[in-house]
Length: 373
Image 1 (tube, helix red, strand yellow):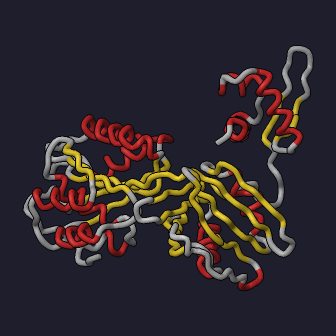
Image 2: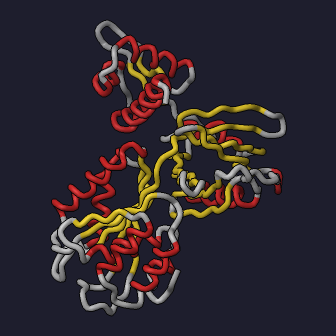
Image 3: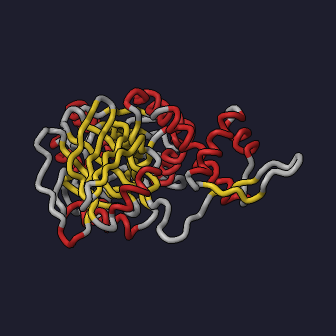
């Protein structure tokens, strides 16, 4: 992202937060929060006033500084989109777009209209307030775009340019508001290019090409204390804004095995990261777990990418019905390119590796160990 865009997003985010928290803000408040020079902050305040993003609520008087507030516009909401980001699996030439929305209704609408309109999206699903859309990078993705019902938004095509993902969208009717007004303010969006085509609006959304990681975790508890689901959720929180958080899930495995604590459930989290920070993020995960687990059998497994290997699916199905050896888990991991880290022991590798096969599964499959992938 350019420095200008970074500063603009920073200022808008700050003025909204300060307005929500204390009702107003001054130039000095922004300086203290950001450490930016006064001239820079004054320049951005002037720009935001011109754009009607903020209002002057108290004029300066003597030594009393001017006070401003974020401008709450009546009518259409300023932004429903919280985050928009993308991951790319360069080996398999596929990717996934994520829309974290503030409205479940908007998520359902976008999932429905994108799917029915055709275009580049090959599969669409939503989990709570997160819309997930798969796309291909094989040069054959563009299909006929259909504007059924007189109002739709379609992802016409998705391209990868170096380390940037570019979505080409067409918006017809009322849904054009999402493209022209809300998406540009979502975290993760680098820039938006718009063009009025008369009967529709065309736009290009630029995001970074991030790496998708699924991190499986197992055996962090004992029969008397701890919970793997809770510790994995704490890990996701610990990673903070160094990653884009996608999901935290629990998967039930074979409930009849000999070595288990209670119900034999493993957990996994999904995150999107800058590929250059792969080792740094994994080190952060292993360090956190080594300090917080209360089990002597904790292990984690990491799958990079968006394709679930066939051998991993076979192994996961087996783990749901039989007791398997640690050696088989490690062998499967090696064949599938999965990284395994022994935190305090090896036993946890079985559930950790198996859990990775379920990152696209729905709750009915996750919670029912009698089902197979």
